[in-house]
Every structure is written in structure tokens, then in C-alpha cells.
Length: 88
Image (cartoon, rainbow, N blue to C red; front, top):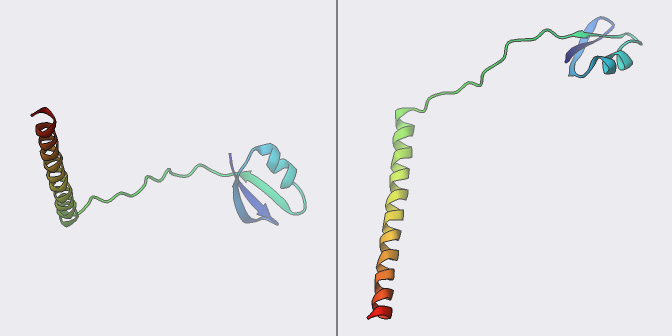
């Protein structure tokens, strides 16, 4: 549970603990506690990427794809050449 910790009536901290812990540590010497009310759950703020960001990402991905295509073509060519040496 969430608890608000007070010293001499003034809030000094908020903690997550069980009530036994609070009873043991915050029931004397001017300390007190009470259960904190549940607040709203905050959803993470997400922003959509801009058109420029998407275009930039697409261009980078296209460059990577072209490099992979070129590499695969080179490997295929090497395999064909090795097969000709071995099987011919």
C-alpha cells in the first residue's frame, strides 16, 4: 500500500510499505501516517513520428535493403562459380 508519512502534522514523505511497517516506525516521536489515496494512472505520452522522420527512416531502410540485395547477389555469384569448378 502507499502511505503518506507525517512529522508533527506536516507531510514529509510517501512510501510503499505494509501497515505493520508503518505502525512500527511511524507511530511515535511526532511521526504519523495515513494511507495515500489512489491517484489517476498516468499513461505514457507517445507522439506520432512526423512525415519527415518516417521518410528518413524509409530511406535508411531502403539503403540497408539494397546493400543486402547486393551482398546476396555477390554470394550467389560466388556459389555458381564454385559449383562450376567442382562439378564441371
